[in-house]
Length: 202
Image (cartoon, rainbow, N blue to C red; front, side):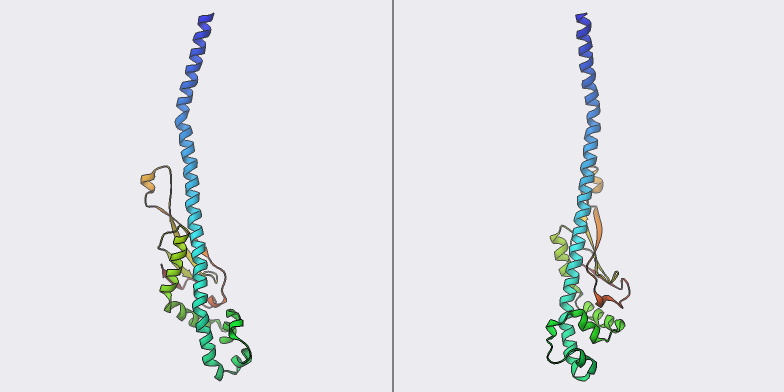
């Protein structure tokens, strides 16, 4: 009876060990898969954050470039335009008027004329816009090259890439990237420009 019990215990322990060893690769594979999924999500999140940061940087830069050009245009045309004089009396400080209100009065609500003015400013400063976007995309973990497209639903859209990380098939995924798009706040000055008409590589 003692011999049988001893043999049974040995066999049972042996079976448990074999089962555990057999299941070990499955557990390792499962955790590697979970880890790879987590890294893939992190890569996607990095690309999205970089794209969002780039789109806000692009919008801010275009605002900064447009403002002095708008003020100059108003000052140059004010003496000969009664409607402008009515909208911008002498006692009003231009710096206190929102940019979008200035644009509306400048072109009397004509978005087509406004779009030609805005496109001219953007085209003249493409390099500065690209540099601003590149800086913020890289600060947020993105790669230094991508695209700026505008307008997209009256917004500036930035496409950014981030390296794809994976615990599985590392050689296969080496050099692969994740692409995401981000769009900044709406801008009235983008109305009248054809959708996706301006593309800037950065």
